[in-house]
Length: 285
Image (cartoon, rainbow, N blue to C red; front, side, top):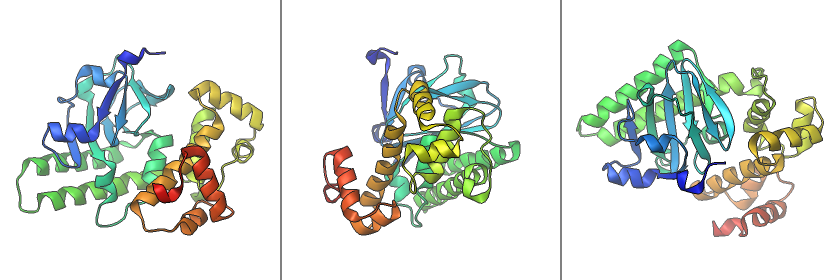
């Protein structure tokens, strides 16, 4: 395990202030991030979208390895320990750091599946043509950020909105099991997290995911704990809590409506679950 002093905090909102940015900070070659920051860190206040072209290496998130290859996109989630392999070449990565509020305050609502997909499937391999599409958005955003046009903020927000829709669409195409897509990975934990990203609103029992994977719940529990250091139930509960908190903070949905959306048997069951795992009630969020 890494020593505590070797873990660095990257607060996206603080970085925005350092560089005079508002809501979004981007680079085509990571010149503004110190080398130590990409070794072992955790992110606060948003997410970081990375494009990695033709690089063989890995990102570890909460100790779980996610391999990078040719034409990869990685979305580094908030409040999770992130570590790149030491051999990573900084100049091979392009990134956009964006605050959660910046995304959620877009004129048209973003499907929150981008947050769940990125949290449980943070690295996705894409075709060369799709990578080129993503890279075009990055370049357009970078160019527009340097131009001081009258409607610069509106243009930047619109381009990022389109990029996020493209990324979500690619996730849906590759991993939305409801559409008939198959799980491509041979790794058990990868399969579990792909299922979790799709079904967490509907099912939060270990047995459901074990049945989907054709294994026993005991085997799944042991395997996930060994791979990630965290129990399956903790992952299941976190997925629901993250979604619940986001809905409470960014929508006008009632507790009843959120309870229904997250498939609880009743509002009181939702409140009890929420209080048990957060120490407070939904209305106090």
